[in-house]
Image (cartoon, rainbow, N blue to C red; front, side, top):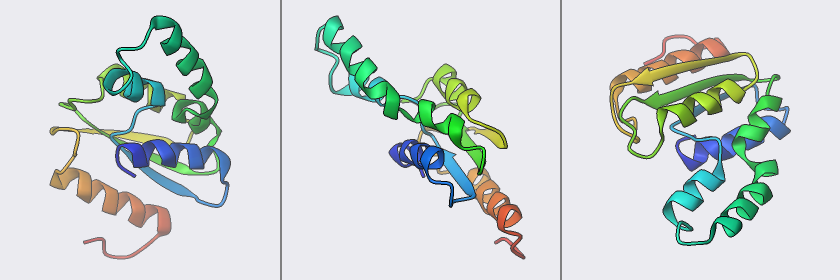
Length: 133
C-alpha cells in the first residue's frame, strides 16, 4: 500500500498472520503526525497530547513490530514533501524482521520506474514467480 495504504497495511501486518508479504510505500508510523500536522494543528497542546496518547495503540509503528510472520519491503522517497527522513527511518526501525528498505530519487508519489521494478522483483522472489515484467 501507498501512503495511508502503507499505514493500514502495517496495522494489518501486526494483527493478521495470514498474509506473508507486504510492500509499504511512503508510509509513516503515526496517524497523529498526519492529523496534527495537516488537520488539527490549531488545537491546544493538551488536546494534541491526548490525541497522540489515544492513537498510540493503533498507530502503525506500534503494530508493525508484531509482523515477524511476514516479509516486509519499505520504499521511501529521498525528496518526500510529506514524510521526514527521520520519521521514515523510525517506522522502518520499529518493524520486525525480516525486512528490507529501499530509497529512491523522487517525491512522495514514488512514481519512478526503479521503485516499480523493485516491487515486481521483490514480489517475484517472495512468491517464487517466473519472469517479472
